[in-house]
Every structure is written in C-alpha cells, then in structure tokens.
Amino acid sequence: MKFDFDKGWSEALAMIRSNFGLLATIAGVLIFLPSAFAAILFPDASLQIAGGNSAQPDMDQLQAAMQTLIAEYWWLFLIVFLLTSLAQLAMFAFMRRRASPTVGEALGTAAGLLPSFVGAYILQILALTGPYVLLVALPAFAGLAPIAVVGALVIIPLVIYLMIKFSLTTAVIGLEGERNPVAALRRSWKLTKGNSFRLLGFYLLLAVAAFILFLIAGWVVGLVFSFGGPETVSFGTALFAGVVDALSSVFMVSIFSAIHAQLSRLSVADDSLEA
Image 1 (cartoon, rainbow, N blue to C red):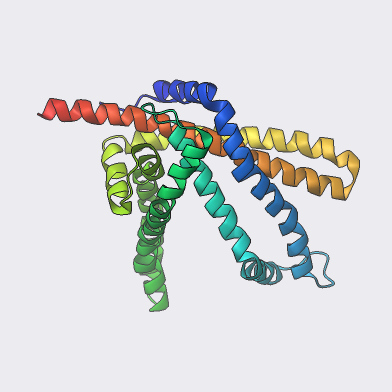
Image 2 (spheres, rainbow, N blue to C red):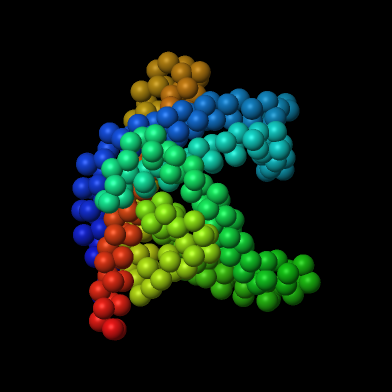
C-alpha cells in the first residue's frame, strides 16, 4: 500500500485545527521568543564582527565574520536548538490520540525524550556526513579529483534518500515514546519503506508551497515595516523570523504526525497481509 498525498494533507490540517491553541502556546513561548531574540541579536553582532571600512565585504571577510559569530554565540545557537527541539517533542506529545496531556505534562514528557532526540540527531548527522567524507573529502585530500567529482554526483541522491528514510525519527520519538535513538532510526526506516519516492514528492510540494508563501509574506512584512526606518525594519524582520519559525514548527509537527499515522496503518496492514 502506498502513501496518499491527499489523506496526509487533510489529516495534517485536521490535527492543526483541533490542537492549534495548545500548539501555538508552546511554539510561541519556546520557539517564537528565542528565535526573535536571536534574530534581533545576530544582525547587530554580525555587523560589529564584520566591521572594516568596506561597504561590501568580500567572501573571505563574510566567512571570517560568520566563524567569529558562531564562536562567540554558539551557546545561543545551542539554546535555541534545544528549546525548539523541546517544543517540537511537546507538540508531538499532544498529538498522541491515546492521551490528552496538559501543557506541563507534555513538556515533562518532552524533557524526558530530549536526550533520545539529541542522540538520534547526532547519529543522523554522522550518517549524512559519513558518505561525504568517504566519497568526496578523502579522495579530494588524496589528490584523486576525478573520484571526488564522481563521489559528489553520487552523494546528492544518497543524502536525499537518507534524509527521507530518517524523516520520521522525531515523530517516532515524540509519538511512540521511543527512547532508543537507534531503534527510532530503524522504525523511521521501516515506516518509510516502499514510499520513499512518494514522500519525496510530498515534501517537494510542501517545500515549494512554503517557499512561495514565505516570499509573499516576507515582501508584505518588509513593505509595512519599511515606512519606519532601518531600526524598525530590523525589528520587524526579527519578529517575522520568529513567527515563521513558530508556525513552521506547528505545521511540520502536524504534517509528520499525519504521515506517521498513515504509514503506521499501512505498515500494520502490510504485516497482516504477509502473515
């Protein structure tokens, strides 16, 4: 049985409508506020770091500025990442149909699952970067340029495939309460079996739609705040970034919950047929 685009989208919208108030509360506190604060801080910090007399710094200056920015504000990146992860896990807890937790209970559940999420996240990074090191970095370092070029061509579809196979890992941890990072990765791999290309198409459609909406909303917000001067534009951009992060998390959690629910039903049906 194959993944149904229309059913996945309609179930995601139904989840958003039935849980939006609670999801928005969590996203607003744990995602919007930290993201908006970081967006306000980073532009000023990057300008101070870039410095110089050049009105248009070259790529080396920008790269050095970014490296310095990360070195000085890594702790803020880490805090935003952890709070965002905690919020998403708490939102997944609300999606569990067998329980209706309060905000405090959902946050408590999410806090207990956070180490598992971090472990699975690190394993995904290793899985995604490992092929690059073997197929591209090592041959290039050894002076085998043709092999590195071929490796670069191979690595792109391979990484995309792995991202699809691991795309339900967070949903497995949040919805099923799986605390073993390796087991969560295996569960995601099993759920997506036979539907990788359909999921790729679904993700691409969502990405294109989200990109178009982001461009239109960004243009409108920029136009509105442009009447207030540079400081108003910077502040408005920061608020817009926070809202985008919060709303995108709500939609992503709902979409992945719907995908997980549908693929879980299909997996059970396939297992029963094989039995």
